[in-house]
Structures are given as structure tokens and as C-alpha cells.
Image 1: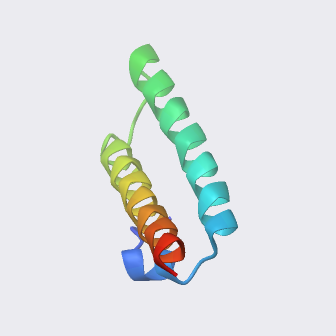
Image 2: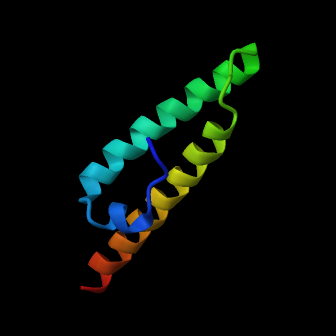
Amino acid sequence: MKTAAASNFRAMSPDQLTDELVKLKKEQFNLRFQKATGQLEKTARVRVVRRTIAKINTVLGEKSRATTKA
């Protein structure tokens, strides 16, 4: 998966974002486990996943604030 721009996430529904967030958190757990056991080869993937999770959380917050205002 390439790095995703926040604009791509803004086009998604909150349910889709939540599903993507769950998938990324599972991947993050697996990457941490691989790192701990010395099996991790692509160390940069940890950073990409962490930042993508942050982008999704940001967009979810924006969407929740928008629905609260409306």
C-alpha cells in the first residue's frame, strides 16, 4: 500500500475509515511483533502505518465535529 493522502480518506465514509483503521492497527501489531522477534525487514513500514493511522484519526475527528455542528 502506498502512502495515502488525507484527501483520499475524506472521501470515505466513517464506517469505511473505521474498517481501515482496524486493519492498520492489526498490521501495526504484527509489525511490532516482527520487530521484537527480529524478523522485520522493512522497518520504514512501521512509520508509514503509524502516520496513516494518525491521518485516519484526524479525518474521523473532522467528520465527527462536522456532524456535531450540523
